[in-house]
Amino acid sequence: MKKNIFSVKRNKPISPLELKIYRNYRIVHGIRIAVAFVITFLLIRMLNLPDHSWPLITLVVVMGPVSYMGNVIPRALERMAGTVGGAILGIIALHIEMYSLTLMMLWCGCAAFLCGYLAMSKRPYAALLVGITLAVVSSAPAGDLQTALWRSTNIILGCILAMLFTSIYPQRAFINWRIQLADFLADYLKITSAGVSRNVLNQPRMTGLQTRALTNVVKMRGLITPVNKETKIAKSLLEEIQSITRDMIAAQKFQINAHWASRGSRFLILNSHTLSDMEQMTRNTLSTLAHALHEGNPSPIASNSERLNEITQELHCLLLANESDEVMESAVHGYVWLSIQLAIQLEALSTLITKALTENK
Image (cartoon, rainbow, N blue to C red):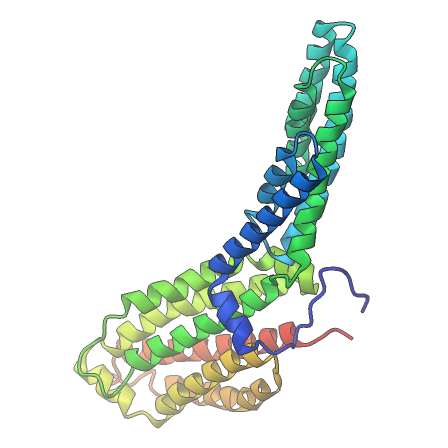
């Protein structure tokens, strides 16, 4: 497969240092911008550049909102394209102003209309930069092309420096995505283990853990586009993982409620060997998936697939065998059905994670 500037090795293990850096990502991001700002400030002071505030402004604007390699480079390239386009329009406006202010206003109005129209396209950031650079350049004195050119050059310089500083130990959206997904699976395991534990007498309150698991799923959605750019993993695959994790959260709440519906139903659930096997297999699969995401090695995942399929068949048999059994409460039927759905979801998630961690040949 042809590599590009965004490419990242999918099965690269996440080291303890990387794990610590990504868990303190906001601090690292702040330090990166601070160092880049100070170095850029010293550089423009030494070179004594005119309008020297623009490289600093551009640096913060480009690096500030997004710092993943899969986002910053396209953003910087769009900014440079918008800057060049806006600079050309602004320089033309300054030239027209030497002859007629009215024509200059008409030209700027048409350029602003174009900017607004294109802002609703696939490249809204570049379109907005056309308008911003037009405003910066055209605000120079009439006919002062030198000031206009310097302002344009300084903005492009800021873009180049932003790409340079971002490329030094770049942050990868794919690594953060793996960490977020592994954290979700770890929290899901904790909630499931506590929620159906035979060692707990009353239904535990786990609002904090459930909120954190949901937050991780929400964060993962924002990483889909940069992950796709960095790894070329199909967006459909990432969206499917997103959908499964969301469904798992919804089903988990109903499953725990069914487990604690009544003393009788809980007694039947706890004394079912098939359901006990399913709970153990769920814990093993969740733990294996989280470990594979950290290690980048999907091989151990396959060992759980066969047993998951076997348990799914056993649960189907259990459900069919007790359909006419009045002793078996509806809550138990619901618990068994949800266990089947969870087994199917875990099998699908295992397949998708294996694909995500496997390098294309």
